[in-house]
Image (cartoon, rainbow, N blue to C red; front, side, top):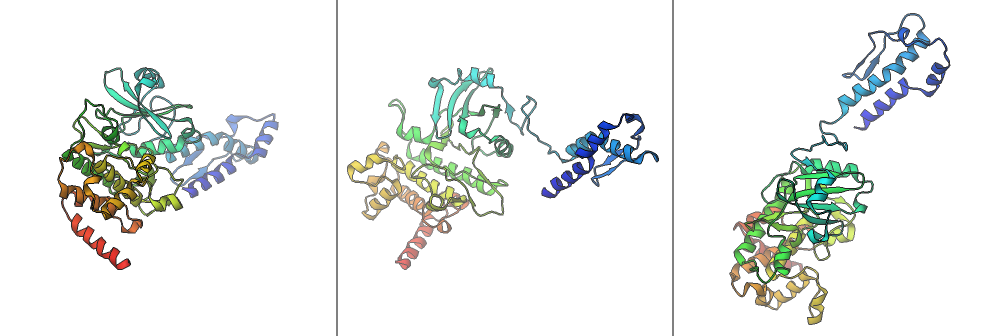
Length: 407
């Protein structure tokens, strides 16, 4: 791509020279009709400018020909080089199947982004419940101002990429709105909220998530993440896997959300260095210390999320200090496992209605996913296979043996 731009700069430099323009302006007898022949043309296949000048007046005619050929050259070059999908602020822009909403539409849908319609909020956005003109319910994610400054092109590139990502366990992007002051993403409304809200913020009238549903959530979210890692090109790294970003549809099927502006990685890359983002308690140690993230960063977050499903607790909770426990959920779970206090780990809302062997296997899987070395963690595709019944126990035993050898 850099060669293309270099060629273009040379081309423009040859066609439009400031001194030539000044000389043309000084010619009183200048006539465009006598300077360019009908054979003046731009050959896009060779990027070569061919201007047929009159035999006489080569100097003035040649300069004038180049001047008036420039717009045609620029247009032809642009048409040849521009991508099939381009980004402007006009209403005609559609990325894949995405709809471009007007700001007014989304203001009306959300009652002008009323606080009463807030579904959730994060470090960089707020999410509002909205009702479109056709009556359908949506969730409107409004990025905060600091995520807008200078981020227009990156926002558009990622939108184009995300518009092609379709999987039953990934939140589908319906559309967007982009103005000079706003960046908004429009998603389907998830009737049962997030896993985090069901675990810790549910009203008394709502039944707790039972054990079969929690197992189904674990498998569905793993499938969604595996798709992002293995079936997208570039692969997509979520970077903030947690219970709050796993949404539940009307059938309590897991839908991985908040990946629309996640990190895109070229397939040849194993990791990249970025500014650290995420949530305390879910961030992998290597990412926190070096800023290097990879698909194994998501695996770590997934492992912590499994512990959220099992315990019903937050990944980071200062309140645990009051009872002499670790603020980090992962450290607390490891400590209780050493003391063989499995029953203490399980969410009290389950009221003992769970399969102990399955709980133990999920805890083992969570700990495999949260090993300190990213190389030791399984891939999400392996996690899916283990959840489908293919070898959690065996992998756990192998890891235990390796741990004993290290000691």
